[in-house]
Length: 162
Image (cartoon, rainbow, N blue to C red):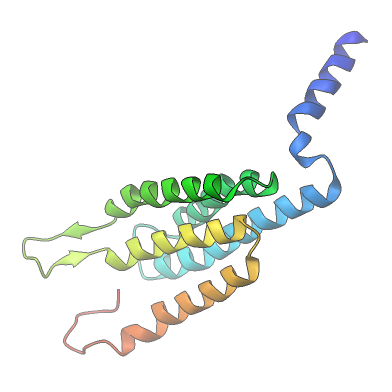
């Protein structure tokens, strides 16, 4: 009996960050929204045959949200949040750099748009994680317009839309 009581107390302590229904629903909604918005960006990249697609974008937005959500939910100071955001922005640069390929000639650089979409997905994850879901949705709508409409307005001598 004592073991079960100890286990119960330990589980309550481990899941204390979700101690009430409202907090649990808020966390779940933010994480779901981050993954969904990342999925929208990733679906667009995957539909164009890019290496960083649906799952990558979803994991980037979800991960970025996970970095800032606990701090925001605990009412961390602005300087602490700022340092975390700076670290996320620096870290995503390494992943983005891996999506850029340079050919023999300087004019053969590929992956810049996918790299930018991963960078943007990070910003979306941070925005959702901080509780600014409306701003994140608006940002994704603008990004989808940019990714879909602007390739048709680019110079016609370019090969295909990125």
